[in-house]
Length: 380
Image (spheres, rainbow, N blue to C red):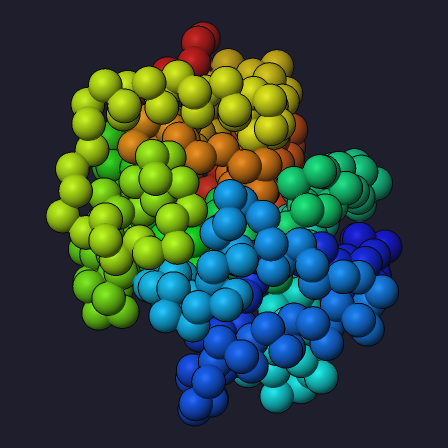
């Protein structure tokens, strides 16, 4: 974990999207010309780390050239990124502690992945012991998606940290705190709202989940993710789903996305993109980052359920499926939050249906209960 963190901050990777978050953070600081300040900031950061900012200035069929020379076109890109409020806030705070805003963006990602890996280690060590837990945590920390998220100034690391923290709380049956953390995750990665809503429905459907204190408020919080996410989109002036779809798949990286407002999505183009996205998901490693731990989980599944493993697995599968239909962009880093969830789930299943957390004594009377009486087959 430490090696991934050190490598990430010492050898970061410049990504154009980072410029948008840096620009918004500059706006929060009252910078009168965030466009110029952002490119100066990125160039300075690149020089310090022995990189060139050339790739941020040119390419993508002239898109980057245009937004570099045209502040108005650059400003039109920012509504896509304003909805990641929590990440921008973290970058803004970090900018007061670092030499550049770009450095703050990378530090937020690297620290988030470090903390997420530490949470995975803590959870796994509690349930399956320190040796096995360390091995599982190392697998997570060294996964390609984890290393990628740690070294770029993007919100995927922060989103992963919040999702991992929320599922850790959920597996300790702290329903309301888990729901609140998972709700906060949509302010780093908005698509987490799909996972939240699917998890709420799965928890309601699965009759063997214990209705502990805070269960029903947690359901309400998780279901509110769709509404709150939509409200945030509206408040920050997001372009909305249709414009983002056109921008990503149809009129790819147009320097003037405001011109796409009001356009519909052609049904045939939408269907075609689902199949194209499925192929990309395989080629990028996105799908394999999900299928590999699912295969391990399938081998570990006991003959009786472990609550709330079934609802979590249903939420992971259904949210990924819905996302790949609605927005089939399958970069490897997008798999990172669900990879964390599946790693935790595999560790919990490995502990067995009747296992208790090694530190369960600290929970007193509210400790997670043992699984139900044995059954002859898996019962939903």
